[in-house]
Length: 443
Ligand code: SAJ
Image (cartoon, rainbow, N blue to C red; front, side):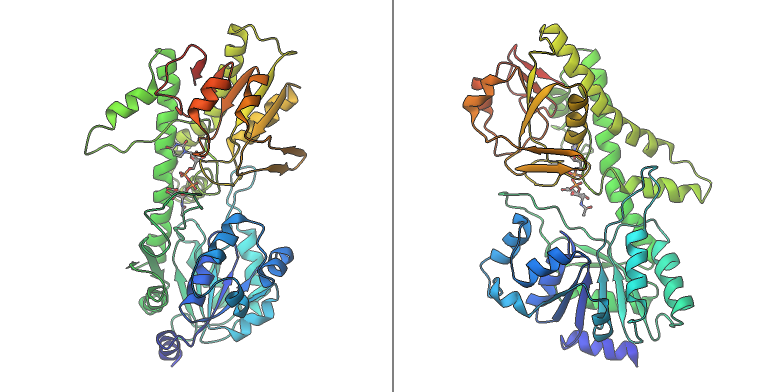
């Protein structure tokens, strides 16, 4: 009865959908369902976010760009979406999609507190006939362990009969500004799994209303592990090229030139770029979830662990190399003034989360070395006790600095202008790999 009822509501677009967590994953998801004609509720504990969304005001360029898109659902139309922090509205919905962050503690242990707290807040409003879909990145087994047990033991639901549980990992790509993204929300295949086949079927039906390709898998563990592997693949390959960068440096070889050569192989090779370290809310975080889970199986994920250590060490290595260059160039610390180009954790975004730049800023601040940063996507940085504003992108001023250090290869930067106006360039990304100049140091 509940299964058929939910299936009919989804087919007739009569289901009311709540998305919990209105970040770069949850908000676009909510809007897609809204645009397809579903009644939608956006739930988030951040009251400032709720009040600005409710008035259709968006600080974050990302969110406002979603709403500004020229469609029939422009900003004013979205007034029909209910944005709220009031969990009691959960009792009026059919579907609850959880898009909440899953960070790690300082000791790299998984931190599921945000999901836990959300479940506690929604608990008394959950009712028979509803479906929960978890999209957050979690270790294999978490959906059934955390939500399954909560729903069956605490709420006395019979999952797959009077309540439905789905796991479908997010594959939202952080907004890359001013770039035409080949893979977008609609055309990126979506993995969907369920506590049971019936749960998975309802999940597939739901997502098929807004996405082109849904890949159904038999168990939530498969889907959880697939998401882990997607991001561990990146983290370990980035760790590989970062390690090779340090070796090539010792061998006086140009890693960027060599990777370009290797990349001419049309099969069996995927290129990654060495950098100053890894940032973001996925790649530096997700592998630690599986490292932790593997311990429950008495398994030590040594290789993944080593890659993560390399990705941390590469930042310290870059800082050491920078200091060696200053000594070689006989730049006295008292006269030293650095300009860091880019602060975001990767090119063309305005996200600072886990960015290696913060470690550079912290280090040189502690050493009382004067520096500025220039990141047109991040005009202001307020991180704990660190507060600084970006300087304007005016290449004429670059000459006022002893060194220009490129940390993030934003496309908005102009290589020629940087080269023309900088006394010394230190490149952590291979951004100037096509330029040979005695004042360009690639690290
Ligand atoms: N990085 C390198 N070298 C590389 C690639 C990345 O140093 O060759 C660094 C980046 O500068 C950044 C960090 O690693 O600091 C992570 O970069 P990323 O390109 O993996 O970007 P993320 O963290 O935004 O990863 C997200 C992930 N998306 C989801 O989890 C839904 C990831 O699976 C995507 O593949 C990635 O976006 C993407 O391709 O943009």
